[in-house]
Amino acid sequence: MKVGIIGSGMVGATSAYAIMMRKAASDIVLIDINEKRAIAEAQDIMHAVPFASATDIYAGNYNDLKDAKIVVIAAGANQKPGESRLMLMERNASIMKDIISNIAQVNPNVIFLIATNPVDIITHICIQIAKEFGIPSHKIIGSGTTLDTARFRSLLGSYIGVDPQHVHGYVIGEHGDSEVICWSNVDIGGVPLEDFIAHRGIEFNEDIKKKIDDGVRNAAYKIIEGKGSTYYGVAAAIAKLVDVINRDNRAVLTVSTLNEDVEGVKNVTLSLPHLIGGEGDLGVLPIKLNVKEKILLKKSAEIIRTKIDEYENKTEGN
Image (cartoon, rainbow, N blue to C red; front, side, top):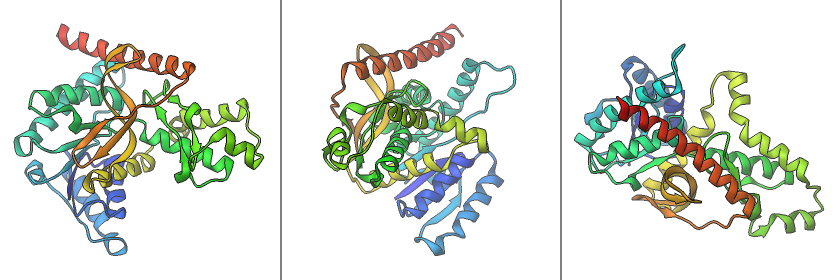
């Protein structure tokens, strides 16, 4: 149950801490171009082990991943002043190719979890790169809207007074502004939301829906405004994925993967409910959407596909 984490910034280091606290791995290897940072983060987390579970956490290199089951990619370049989004994407694509090629040489059977943003586009790029090394797409999984789904369940659960773990609902599509909250199939412990709120006498209207929607959709902006970046939520999502894969728990999670067709949009990488287990992505699950949600999902898929096309046209032109 060894896990490698590429990138020891806030997301990578916090993911390592969350994985350790969750007892989701026996060994965690931190790899970073800044070796001092990786060593420092590993040592700091190791000091918390006596308060949690026996986990070996250390800084290492790609050779240490030869027996890893999972590698989390939390590395990536930051946008420079005057740099376009496409230029940044090209630099990140180069970083991903370097990471995947180095890992493929020592462990071609590893499962990749992608946490680098924009996660849908980066995951799509990683899937294309992995093909060159014979790595199947079901072993490349983006964190996608796992965090957005958690935010939705948390906010809705708080409003109606229910443990979020008993709120069943999904956020799908892009991990970003065009994400789709699937109100039409929310249930509370198996009871449809409409029936639950009627039975409990809870006030629920479009304004409340909009407030929850805003809390989910704009959460990252508000957090970044307050403290510069988000990392606890996504780290918990990564730890959950690691736990599910390592234990083959067969959980349903809204991860970002390559889809042949989403509402008529071909070959697009976005989030839908998937069954996740020991071999990685075990397949998408059918989800019933109303007409409005289908239209919104198609729009989200088109936005992502347009960004992919821009990137691919730019790289082909070079």
